[in-house]
Amino acid sequence: MKLHLVSLGCAKNQVDSENMLGRLQRAGWTLTDDPEEAHTIVVNTCSFIEAAAQESLDTILELAELKKSGTCRRLVVAGCLPERYREELVRTMPEVDLFLGTGAFDRIVEAADGGGRGRGAILPDPDRAPDLHRDCRRVLSTPHMAYLKVAEGCSRDCTYCIIPKLRGRHRSRLPEDLIAEAKELIASGVKELILVAQDTTAYGRDLVPPRSLGRLADSLASLCGNKRNGAEKPWIRVLYGHPESIDDEFIRAVAAHPNICSYFDLPIQHASNRILKRMGRDTTRERLGDLCRRIRGIVPDAVLRTTVIVGFPGETDKDFDELMGFAEEIRFDHLGAFVYSDAEDIPSHRLRGHVPREVAQERYDQLMSAQMDIAAELNQGRIDKIYPVLIEENLGNHLFAGRTYFQAPEVDGVTYVNTAACGHELPIGRFTRVRVNDAMEYDLMGEVA
Image (cartoon, rainbow, N blue to C red; front, side, top):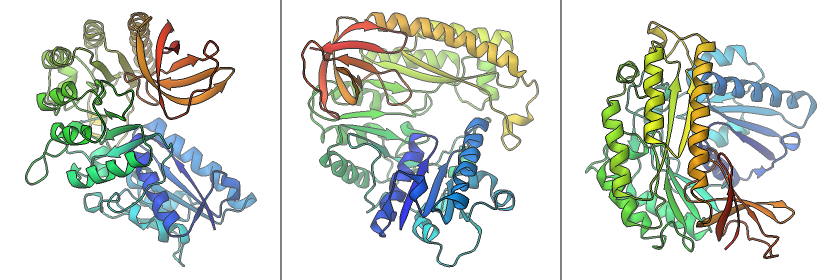
């Protein structure tokens, strides 16, 4: 029997999908990239914001057509969408045979098989979900790069966020389990290990005794060599940090270990103290500025990435001007923005002063235009410098695409490498030293050094 799985949403979802595929493969399923030849189709969904939920619904309905015209006999929908909308989906989507909530990923084998089970949903408490990573060999999406999920859930109360409801409270994995999984991934050929969670920098504080991300990073770095941003040994990168949970111990670990990418992903969400308070964020513009300066002081080659929300309920022109001013002051290497996404089941829906969509979009455009100029100027400063680049794709005509230590997958730019001068192919999934000779707003161009 053949099975096709579609994974939507973030890197954390991708890890869940890879774990489910590992369980299914071990149970005897043949995995296929072609949905038209699959007997069972699984969709691992996202519903973090309205656009993500709509993409999930569109994907489900598109694949459901294969139950009429293709080989597909069973359609399973897993993850955040069924966790958020629960029995409502069972009533409104008869095309789906079974829904699995975020606490039911361990039931994927019986869900895919059916076993006489009728339509319905399996929706256990996410807080009681088992650790899928223990003793489970994943089917990686890429052989040279892997995400390592260090924790599940989130214990914060941000008013715009549904994640604690969908994923439960923050639960860290044991460091010995993480180190064992990291060893397996590195032994399999992974050249970049990316630590992820809903609040990655809060790792370990819930364990008894408490642990820390800094100490975990120290342990993982010892597995991976010791050259700055690692041309010979695998990189370690940390995504989805939080400005309220990052500490100096972790920052010093990045500074101390050359193979930990000096890349700090810290979504600030806003820079107006009034809006930060309405968002449920326990910080201020002043503290955020101090944090950015402290990181750059401890790690001189630090790269800062952030995300922000524009058009949050109550955001005035003055609040937005404060956000613009902060972005121009700090000059983030990478900045992503979202227009506020409203929903009836999040606390911010009940706040007064909702911003018209067209006003929020204008603010988004203005902010991203300013950030494009900042990013372009920063990239110009990288011309004539040499960086290790992890080669990921052969584009043909002597052109390859890869990433430097300051370019995370999917969210940042890429580095194009032209090999016409040297005349040889670059191995995919290996590091190559590249001299940058041109720069665009977000991407770089270079040649083999």
